Image (cartoon, rainbow, N blue to C red; front, side, top):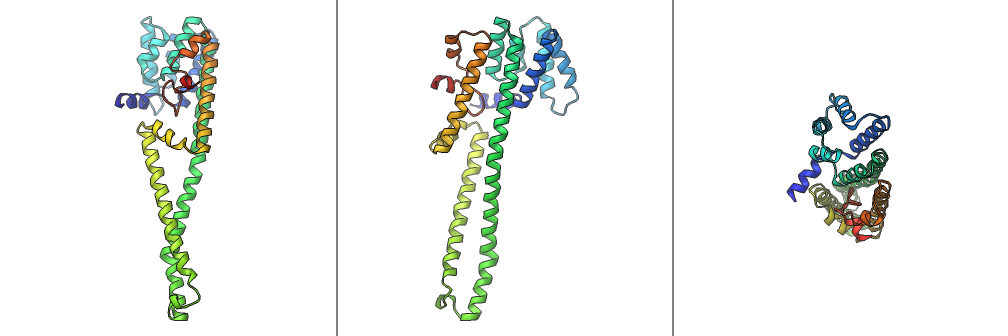
Amino acid sequence: MSTEKNRKKAELSYAELSSFFENMAMMLNAGILSEEAVYLLAEETSGQENGKLHDALDRMSGVLREGNTFEEAMKQAAVFPEYATDMIRVAEYTGKMVDTMFHLSEYYRTEESMKKTIVSAVRYPVILLFMVIAVLIVMLVLVFPAFYGVYNNLTGSLSTSSFNYINGSFLLCRVLLVVMALLVAGLLCGVWMWRSGKKEQVRKFLSRFKVFGDLFRGMDLYRFTSCFDMFLSSGEMQDEALKNKHAGSGIGGTKGQTAERS
C-alpha cells in the first residue's frame, strides 16, 4: 500500500501528461525523432518551478540515447501511469505512436476537466455548509440571548409568556448545528481517506447513494470505452484489448476495475 501510494504521488498531473503527449505527438508528426523531441521538451521545461517534469524528461532523454525504447524510457522516468506506458508499448509495436499520443493527450485532458468539474461541484456546497454553521453560531450566541433579554424584561419570564416558540427555535438551531458539525466531520474524514489512498472505501460508501452511484458508473463507463477505443486505434486486437488489466485505470478507480466489470 505504501509503495502504491508513493508511486501515485510521483506521477505527473493530468494537465502535465496531456501537455507532454500533445507536444510529443506534434513533434513526431513533424518528423522529429523521439530522442530529439524529449530533449527539446526537457530544455523547454528547465526553467519551470516544478522540476519533476524536467527531471523526468532528462532521465528519459538519457535512456533513449542508450538505444532503449520509448516505453522503457517512460518506465525509467517513474512518473507515468501504467496505463500510458502500456499504450505506448502497443503503439511502438504497431507503429502508431502519433495517433496514440494524440489519444492520450485528449484522454488526460478530459480527465483533468472531469476532476475540475467534480471539485467545483463539491466546493460550493461545502462553502454553503460553513456559511450555515456560521449563521447558526451567530443565532445561538448573539441573537437568541438578545431575544431572551427583551422578552424577560417585557413578561418577566419567557416560560410563562406567549413566546414559548423561542425555546423551540433555540433547540432547533442547536440540533441543526450538531448535524452540520457531523456533516463537516464526515466530509473531512472522507477527504483524508481519499488523499491517503483509500479511494475505493470512499467510492463504496458513496455508491450506496443513487446520485453518486450513477456518477461513478458513468465515469467508469467513459474510461472503459475511451481506453478500449485507444487500444483498438493503437492496433491491438479486440480480445487482447479486453484482457488488458490496466484499461480504465484512470482517476478514482482501482487498476483494472472498469475493464473487469465490463
